[in-house]
Length: 371
Picture (cartoon, rainbow, N blue to C red):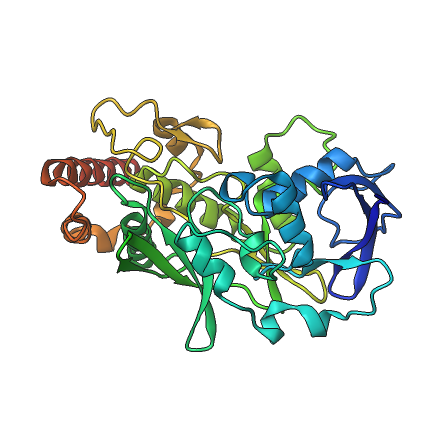
């Protein structure tokens, strides 16, 4: 079988050419254009392995598909289109235009997402933004009042991720932080979170990993330092305020999953200008170790802040200024945490009490550092 050729596109800008083998795997990347939109650092040529890494990080994981070949086929049948950015894969010789194919203007069928969400067989010949949804939890896009919203299930046995998302968005609101608002839904299979898309055709997400991977590393700085430096260079003057608050926010939530794919910046998809930090989102893996409810309010040194690559308790050492952390709305927030978790029939009251006690202790620790 002859190889398949695609143009790698950002809207109507061609960024590179790609070759696929019979398993629909990317085997070669060439004719790379120098562009602010190219997601992998380009200097003396682009590593195909780096591009494949980017492709995998942006696609539905193989674990939620039948196999790698089916996953790749599904992604390319959907031309790699998503609802978080403006990249797509254009078949060689095609006369298709961005305006004709993107999901922002043209909508999408919800059939694939319904099947993903209910563990039904997936039709890889369909076209859907759900093939560009990474992560292990079951999730799907759907329309509510003509707006795309994302649904994401909790993981058994506690299914507490949707409740953590709800609490996190309420906490961010109380602290005065830009955030995505989450609600909780329920069906016969359990609980799921609901949030509106915070991107559109004009405003796309560049996650922190991809934001700094466009840099050539010629220094001894940490990734976190590179990220904040690049934010300043792109006009985000209040980056210290934002990251200080994010560190404290994740400390209070005991969020063990602030990895480099779930924070970042918002980019103007036409000019390439960085407009702002992305709002806080994806905080479902909080108040626990991994997906379970293993929680020790005293011995929590095993919890790690992935953004800083340090123990959670050490993360507060990276806060430059505690004075601009607003905790004034948190006096009764422990009771709010309890009320949200108590609506989850899978959680035990003693576990909820431990979580609330630990949250209150952490708030007091931050207040002491503010004095």
